[in-house]
Length: 113
Image (cartoon, rainbow, N blue to C red):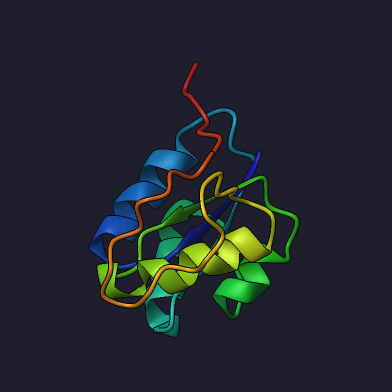
């Protein structure tokens, strides 16, 4: 399985370490607006650096982890929906900045066993 990881700060690095340790994960595709963070995480846990969230989402990944700051979640979720990685079974209007995303999204989560 190929997993995209958006955001590589403290939480993103934790997710990268966890994902890199799962036998089902064959490749991580990484993106962060701070290139040094992407390089550090790729160096520590492996993975391919993509230049942007859109590049991650168009790279043929099977799933995505959003580990960016909370204020960016709605925008990144909309990109994931547009890329076909998430489905919003409820109303199709996009979430507004500053509002909570209330419609559940269907995802696939790799397991360690």
